[in-house]
Structures are given as structure tokens and as C-alpha cells.
Image (cartoon, rainbow, N blue to C red):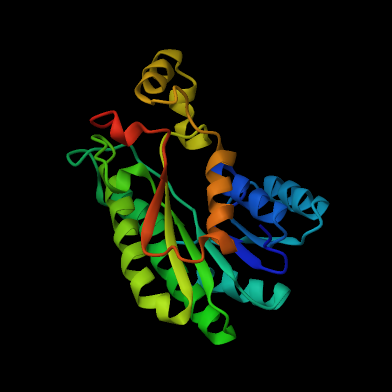
Length: 255
């Protein structure tokens, strides 16, 4: 599999799953635009890692909840590399709040970063792909919680449920233009978003025991799936979600 000559944008790309996706795509030869909103030092370090693989990378400080800043990501990719072939809508946050606890600001922030950014990231990337010709790939990093309730984390689940239907509807709409839209639904992953669980041995043991594989995924295991979906091997896949969850959705009533 090779992505040589392809240009990818990864939102939320300087940590966690996003960072692993950047490296997995670069290992296959893609040039990368790395979106970030904090920790520019980590972004610079990641740029160097990509360039050490023989590819090019540029970090762009852009708040993906703002449509004009999403457009700046597209524009920077075209300015730097000439095109956009792969758009990975990865940026995401959670509040760990329930229906009764969530306030308006928390709700709006989760929906803006998780769902609004994915919608307009898909729209703007698709417009560029149509303009330049040759189709493309849009990969939405969702979650098992697009299908699977998680009491106490309601806004997050709503946002991921929205990503599910975005992937399916946009995938159908954009297929005639050769643009494939695919979701990736991770289960529990060892990333900073799960730091509270990773730092609590009792909670971690409970979670591990609920996963048939007996452990959390590593970010690279999610990224490897994304790299496959970005390549020729996934040329007949669209409007669906690939779950990467160690079997947890089939074995547990919910977390």
C-alpha cells in the first residue's frame, strides 16, 4: 500500500490518535497538514518525525470549530502541496456529563468541535476534491459510542451519533464524485482523553476485563486502520463505519 504523492489533513493531529494517524499516513508516503490548537512544540516535533520518513509536513494552528479556520487548513494544504486527497476529521473532546448535568456551554463546545467540525471539514474538503478532480477520501474518527450508549457522557454520544449519519449521508451524496466517506469507530484507547482511567488501576482493570482482547487499544492500532482506508485497498468502501474495539461492543451492555 502506498500513499506516495497524496496530501492529507489531520485535525487534532498533534496528540493521541491524531498523532498516530499522521505518522501512519506519512509512513505510506503522504504529505501532511497537521491541525492543532495547543502545544506547538509537540507539532514541531511531529513535523520533524514526518520529514525523517521522507515526507513533508506543516503544522497549522486552527480552531476547527470555526469554519473560516477549517477553510484555512484546506487553503494551506493547497498552497503548500497543491491539493487535498485525504481529510481526517479527528478532533474531539468530551465533558463526561449526563443529560441532567450538562450546561449549554458544555453542549455547544462538544458539538462544535466534534460534529460541526466534521460536517464542515467534510464539506470543504469535498469541494476542493471536486475542484481538483480525481476523487478523494474523507475519514471521520467516530467512536463505538455512535451506536452504544455511555451514560454520563451524553453530549459526546450525541456528537458521535451525528458523525454516524454524516458519514452515511455524505458517503451516498459524494460517491458519484469519487469521494469515499468512511467512519472509524475506536473502542477504549490509551490516549490523553482516557487519562483518568489510565491513572486509576481499579478502573483500568474493570475496563480491561470488559474487553474481549483484555486491554485498551494503542493509538497506532487505530491509525493503521485509517491508513488502510486511505489507500487503494479500501476503494469500494463508503458510507459505513469500521469499528476497532477489541470486541467490546459485542460483549458488554455499555460503559
